[in-house]
Image (tube, rainbow, N blue to C red; front, side):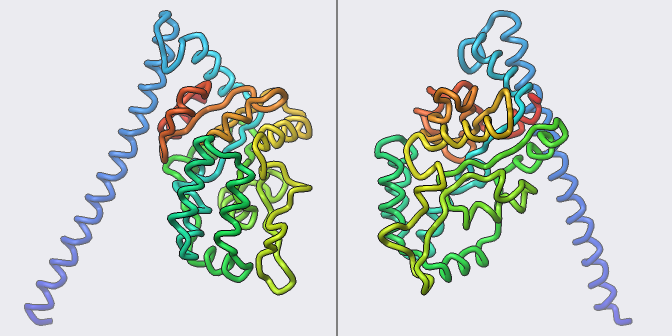
Amino acid sequence: MSSSSSRFVVRGSRAARDDDDDEKKRMFLKKKMKLSARRNVMMKMNAMERGGRGDLESSDTKRAYEIWKTCDAVCFDVDSTVIDHEGIDKLAEYLGKGEEVARVTTQAMNGEIPFEKALFYRLNAMKCSKEQMKEYLEKHPVRVSPGFRELREKLREKGKAVYLVSGGFRQMIHPIAEYLDIPVPTNVWANNLLYNEDGSMNEQKPFDDENEFTWRAGGKALAVAHVKKTGNFKTVVMVGDGATDVEARAEGGADIVIGYGGTVRRASVEKSADLFVMDFETLEQAL
């Protein structure tokens, strides 16, 4: 072997060592983040025991954490919660309608316009065919928010049922549920897109408004109430980032709502939710 080949092997070994070092650093940082999340939870709980304040009034925060720990089931919003983006906005970008659809999404999530109007407007702006949806899903694999897979496993270990309750589309939500080993379609409530025989979107009736809940304002409360009744659950928690998630706390619906700000931090949700977190590790460590 020539001297140049020998030098190549040395450089390759050094690169391998560098990769090992990088992996060790990543594992160290991940462990450090988990310890930090655990310390934050313990500090909040200790403060409440001393009569101090958590993120909300101490008694309310303590009650919310207790319900979280003892609940029978958890319903998660999907867009900007389970996944780190708004699926409908990404689909709109793919179809060349990104800006106008994103603007309406923001208004809907902030509670500025009725959700059903926002949904109808966005669908008619995109006019997404069945074939376009298929192509989009093939080019955009599932990407969940940091820490969610670990939280999902912890909930499974604790014997808590997990549901996805979304104002998005079953066509986009089902692959996410399957990726996370959440039963489809039984543990998913979302909107079902309707197509014409040629695969084009049904512009007169773009979604099923007869057999689904979440196409309208207050729909998540109805979906959670249905989950609670049919699953015979005593206590159900809703977790999400938007105004429609806070609505799930209506009578017969979620016992508490936990706001999630890890993707988008909405002031209205932070103010209205029973508990507000910036990462899923906080919830994992609190179980």
